[in-house]
Length: 354
Image (cartoon, rainbow, N blue to C red):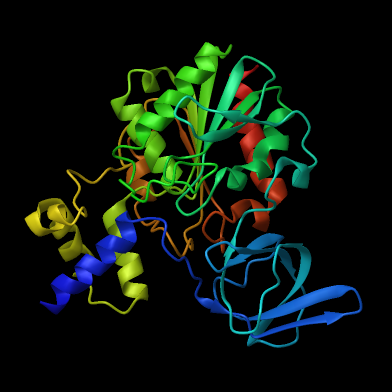
């Protein structure tokens, strides 16, 4: 009975959106020296990577752009606060680190990027240039702002770009639908974005997905007639297999090894789960032939999504390029090595011309 109750709680966290989002890393200190603010976090696998990155807390109400600096202590990691978006953090706040580098196009010095209301009522970022379009799909508990750090690199190729919001995003970007279907239904929103691009001058389309956004794209490629027209895909830290990722998360939470498999059986088969709105008809996967050129950027030390099955994904995709960022963390590959990341992205996209 305890396992059943725990599985209900886990399924609610997986499939219900819009609740409180809290991090796991406590702020140990926050201080100002002259005009410069600093903070310290405990040293662990998540705080070790270098590079500018975002720190979030309190359901993303708190947001700061930070950069780790040299410290003599092996137990704490000191960060310089580069930009504060809204309220300041307090000692004891539980934070998480992310690859975001800003909230709006202006934070990146981007010109010609505007808000666009999509046919389903969600908001997107749109930059019109050449007939090759890149459509960006962000990850879970993120927003379209997550994708902006790649806009300049792609704009240099003369491509148009569209970064969509999902209907489950908080208003005004999204519709506030507090439910995730792990891509099994959200793919229609990508299909709608593809239709919009073709209707506004696109002759060639590449899809670019982060984390769960990659899984959503994968479902669109498999299930949509329009998806079959997509020329190529780029995935950053993709969710490729749900069960192995849930096993990773269960292990981090101290659950027994078979807890994830048990919970998945309930999500797929339990009548009680369906009555609670926690059921799914099937679990999607990216371990399938994509049938087109693909660039997969990942780290074996992702920490959030399991990457152990990358070899199984690469096998049926001979047109795929799989690049590992050693020591990287989830969706923070760019931050760790911007030059290597941007070079890989440019080299891949150049084959599609403008």
